[in-house]
Length: 180
Image (tube, rainbow, N blue to C red; front, side, top):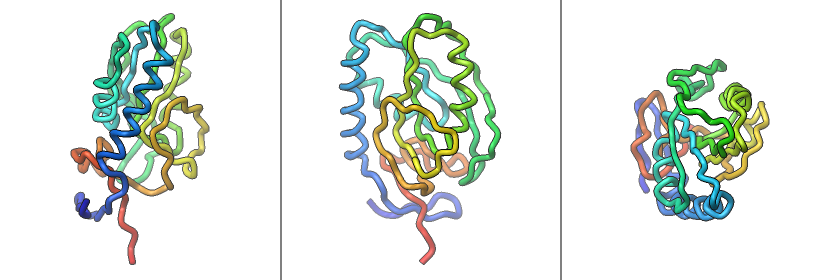
């Protein structure tokens, strides 16, 4: 894996496509086991989770549905501090087993604002599956049920993660290069 440039930033290799797929396979096997005969509804949070959600969902063997919601709190390489809902949830989740699919949790603010809305809809259960977690950046603790990777508090792109909307289209994950 070579370095890549996304707009004005240089990113260095961090997680290979193979490493990512191995962890997603492990997660799919665990979810299959945990949700056998439950027919869960997966709610993927756009835009960042679309590749992760697709790869995970393709590996599941259980009966399941998926829908998408758009929540955003990023501008550039920093959280804007405000959660913006652009596309709402239009599926009844009452008494359904729900699994939220998210690309990354760093501060936890986005899900902290969204989870109470979901709880008010009275799902049978609510779990969170994420690709990446930045424990050092967490300000709003969120219980994570399934996590592929815990990473340092560094800015990353690729595999659905972006910098100003660009850089999502890599099957690997790259970390922002630090100045020498």
